Image 1 (cartoon, rainbow, N blue to C red):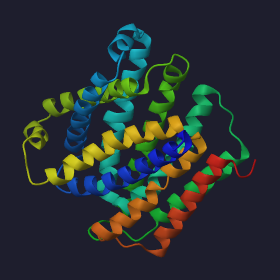
Image 2: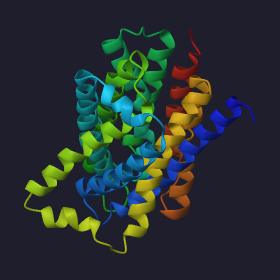
Image 3: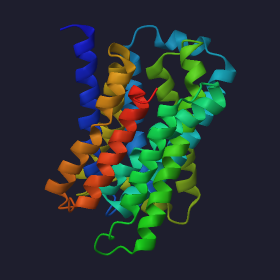
Image 4: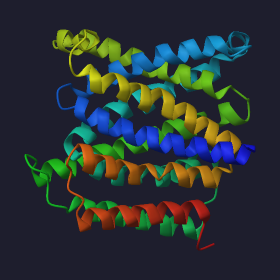
Length: 303
């Protein structure tokens, strides 16, 4: 098996892992607050990443030689891209469900392109503008969908805004560290660990300072909902990330990106089977438009 096939397999693994994590985190979020769930999944993934780093030769020496500036960028990126963005995402997931959140996730690519143009001076083409417009149209169609049982239309709109905000912050945080990874060759796994640590510490401090700190830290004591929280955290914040990195390392970036976006299909199927979410025509249309928009942006169909 050559590197191209390995990369495609890993990209598909990332899509499937994230889709499974969405279903599990949705179930966990029914009984745990977004902040507590974010703190739990990040802490668990941080322990696993730290253990992984120990097994990678030369990692400690690399970390010792990195500049204060690079560390600062990675830490700031972790605070906004993990502490804030992930908390907003989990709240959006709680309000919307997996089917709708799959549409919201498609706004990630346009935000990456936007911040790449603003921060890295990467040019935007006609395909970028057309693709972003198609994705936004899909999101707007989905936002007009009748709300799930127990939710008002206003809650759905707020959920979409929170989700889009999380994608914007996540995109900004990732684009911000691109020069650190590309130009200065910082190891990706090490950088991810630092970002995750920087994103976890503020959550822990916020939880400790809150009057609800007993509730927040109670997630670390075994409860029945660990059957959703533990595998969801491992799949979504550890395994999916490693597959994602390997996919972009061993496959063409455009191919890996498109395969990653198939997570929305897996997420819809899993949500329909396990969460009994209705797969309506409007939702399918929104997903199809959003997916086509991502393909348009990635393959530059109109350039």
